[in-house]
Image (cartoon, rainbow, N blue to C red; front, side):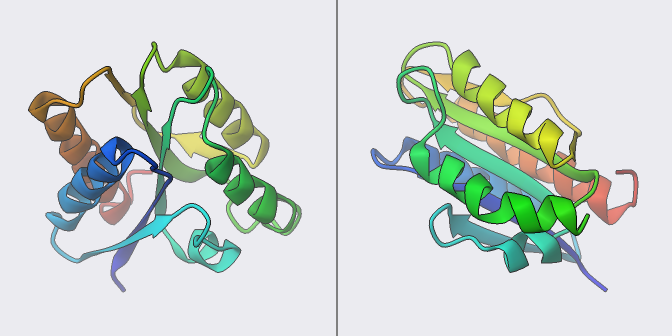
Length: 154
């Protein structure tokens, strides 16, 4: 059975989408891993339940995560938590930030504690203009989550 990584993100300006695509590309480099890349409004509870690992991406808006990412959490939380369908599922985060990104990251991590999900990597935060280094960090993030889930480390 192949390992599955779900990448959920929201993007208006395109930077977070580029980061999500880099995460998905990195995860896809791990042999036998299936990657599901979904915009937050399209991602469902079934997507969350069916994945082996989750990577969440958001732009920073006013020091907070995108409303679409919060909507994903709101739509999935009760069923996922109460039925313990995602208990300690591994996750990681990436943020595209015009400022410092810490507010968006803190909000996402706080919600993930409530599910509860298990943080397995430090976040990638791209501050200001998106660079090739940021995208390389995103590919590495995807590879790390995918390899760890595939090997059963997480």
